[in-house]
Amino acid sequence: MHSHEKAEQVANELRSRIYTALRDGGLNAEPVIELACLLEEWGMRTPATRELLERPTAHLTAQDLTRLGEDLLRDTGFEPTFALEPRLWTALEQALMTVERDVRATGLSGTLRLVSPEWDDSGQAWVEFQGIHHGNGIRPGVGSDPQWALASVADATQEVIMEMIWGVWPVCSAHGLGLRAELGHEMAVWRCTGAGTHSVAPVGELPPEPR
Image (cartoon, rainbow, N blue to C red; front, side):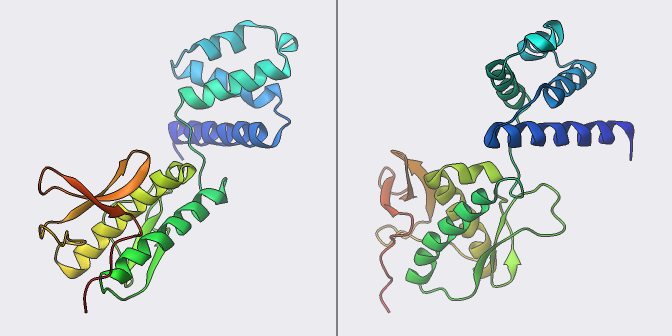
């Protein structure tokens, strides 16, 4: 392993330790100071790293460590993995169950599930339809908001279904145009670009197609 890759691995381990301690309680100064030193070595100087390296460790209170630990995670764009926060995966699975109602309402059959392919080292989730996963991966952080999760899972489902059927899905019955999943007024909805763009239905509530 190259030195840069090893340093990245160490940084990720430290951030995971800090995140877990912030979540569960019991954060101590060691991982916070160590991460601040590593970031400084990389030339990433922030108010949090400066404070951590300039103040005596003994003067850092529990509140200080919490604040500075949160700042370091935010400044480095940390996002917990599914392994670290299984509830994020559960949230995406629940969103997929809602999207599946639209899949069945439009007459499509076949297994629909959430997967984490071995070839994907990004840590994302993928929607698999009829044994195929294609299109957009879904980052763990998406699972932190139910409606964001719903819109993202709907978008990923749309991508893989259209790849499988070689056609547009779902379709606006009024205009014959494809729909797209969007967040509107903090709700995941299917929107049509026809007639000035309009909402067709909340995700999970597409009307059944006539048989």
